[in-house]
Length: 148
Length: 138
View (tube, each protein chain N blue to C red):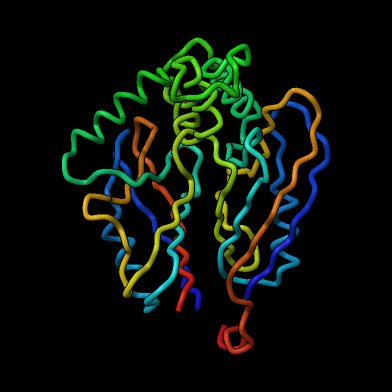
């Protein structure tokens, strides 16, 4: 069984935004009980990532680290092949993934207790983002329900 | 056809742990011949990587590189409730993978000869790590 939903995320400026609840709702709509959920963001200047939800400072500090690793003053469009100083931004974009697959367990996202799914926006100007969610798997079988 | 199983590993400090065999066992149990095996780690201070499995120094070098890239106790970090390795562990996780998908071919994990699946513990003490393995295929 396959379920796909493409949605437009509201305008965001630079920062990390939790989308766990949104993903949970889509998984619920899919009626898939066991399988996987693939998240894909349709651009290369924002990312989808898993981060700690226990301490707010974790995601901010990760952003600080990335900023230090890839300062915005360095040309983000420079080509890695001919400019050594292009390595940091390339690292930033390449190392933070624009796709993520999470398990679907018992009709819910099977992520850990302290994990949250975040949209990580790099652009400082507000921008809308397109997200495609593809869920593959099996619904809860009636026979399975009876035997439990 | 879908097969899902949860695995739990005990880690003993920072470093990489080869979990290829345990993943192969799950694939075998699934009876799926062709498909995709998706592995997900349910933590934000340990991650998954595919890495060279012949020479163990590759993995100790990787860890040494990470240590230089994200130093423990860096003054940049304010999140250090659980020690100087706390925040670096979260960053190391973001820089590596929480999720891996590998092909299943003829009922086996279709990895390269020199590829291994590793759980990378980023904390310096011992932890129990939960993984979810989902195989979709025919």
